[in-house]
Image (tube, rainbow, N blue to C red; front, top):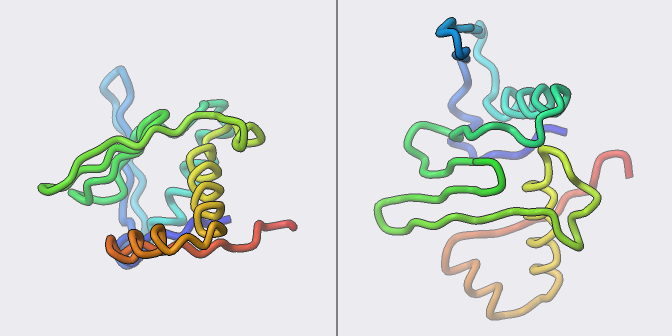
Amino acid sequence: MIPEFPNEVNGNPMTAVEMHTRDGSNLQWSFDPPIQQSRAMAAFGEMFSRLGLPEMPAFRLGEGDGIQFKQGSVDLRCTHQSGVLYVESAEASWVCRDARLKAHALAGFFRELMDMENPAVRDLMQRWGLSYRPRPVEGQ
């Protein structure tokens, strides 16, 4: 399943990826034609999962977008706001122990939050320009 990302990510296709190793060598892949960032990020997530890594290493969604995924957290920064969102295994997320734990926990949290149909929550999300739409799970 390809995750959905904001239009600025999907509208800014990936043209190359560079990886650095401890011994100083570099690996670079160039894409012609360019590929959609969300497809590339999904492929990297699958690759790290298959390598047996617990989570993807820290990466940024885009240059200067202020969102950085780290192991166990999501770092949020701009010139006006800053914070860290921590994600860990819990009662409702025990079924997902791999690199998708953040997606599982956040999607479940927002689904339950929206199911509350609380006007204060709806107003707060509207105030900050946030919305959430659950989608069917593949294979169900």
